[in-house]
Amino acid sequence: MTIIQHLIVDQFGAFIGKHSERILVTKGDQKIAQAPLIHLESILVAAQGVSLSADAIRECTERGIPIFFVSGSGSPYASLYSAGLTGTIATRRAQLRAYDTTLGLDLVLSLAAGKLTNQANLLKYIAKYRKETQPDLYEELRRTALEIEDHINELTSYRCLPEFREGSLTVETVRDQLLGIEGRAAERYWSAVVQVLPEKYGFRGRLRRGAADPVNSALNYGYGILYGQIERCLVLAGLDPYAGFLHTDRPGKPSLTLDFIEEFRAVIVDRVVFGMANRSIPFEQDQDFRLTQPFRRQLAEAILNRLESPAEYEGKRHLLRNIIQMQARRLAACLRGERDDYVPFAMPW
Image 1: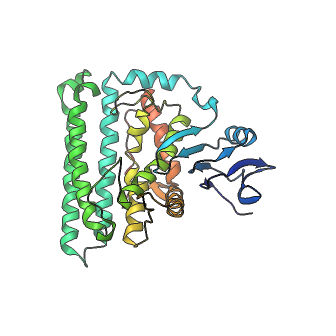
Image 2: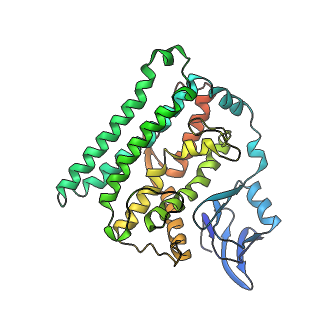
Image 3: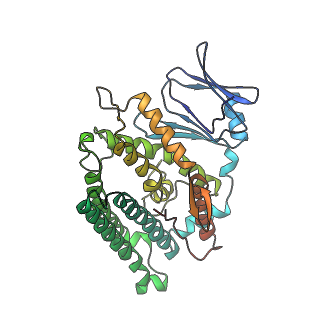
């Protein structure tokens, strides 16, 4: 039997059930897939009209196998995991207290710096393959990476302010300024990305809601898949995904998930999508400019495979999905006062 770590269910009318020691996906009398529970890491439901048995849900929750649900555009709308995972209290109390202290601001600065570092490093990675063939573009990408790094210095300069040292500076007082810095860096990053993607994809810049071009649609879908993985890691670390710092509070808004995912967008999703585009893989869309089901599956598999890739982390090689989990635990330890600071993960390119 084929080993499946990440099961994708993307056919309308599919049924997810449990049979013996495996998850079985059927549609009518047809067997679509089966995954031994011993190897299964997650289930991604990416279609309407999918049903699950209570036995499958119970077996997955008891074994710590999350079930994620995303729409056709990649918007995550539900996750299933054991209720016992949300039963940790000490970390959550510390997390809520930190919002009104300098610690909360310090974490925001680190998370934002991690995001910009990985964006700059990805541009450097893309640039090195163009040094000989496109020297002008090589220089432009390197220059943009340095400009993004200048914005990192802007962020870290807040730690030098007297109010920060005194412990009176919080996220609330400087949120708009921090978002402005992130926004200027993002503008430079996406302007550079426009120059490295083939013209045929029609990418003119980053769009979230209502994107019709295939690259933005692929990015949105990829981020939706990553979102579930990020939320799971936060919950396993004892954190509340809805109590963030930079992203503002709103009912139903997973603010901490949105804060924490920024560190990994370029590492996991951007690199996959840009790589597929530069290999001229067709980003198939239907007549309504939605990604087709076969391409969504191809993209989901590529994102999940990327999570299984090894990377350097604290002197050793770890899978990226394990690095995300270790970073979530590092964040929790920092909030509890067991670590002096939060060091973001920087992907070496």
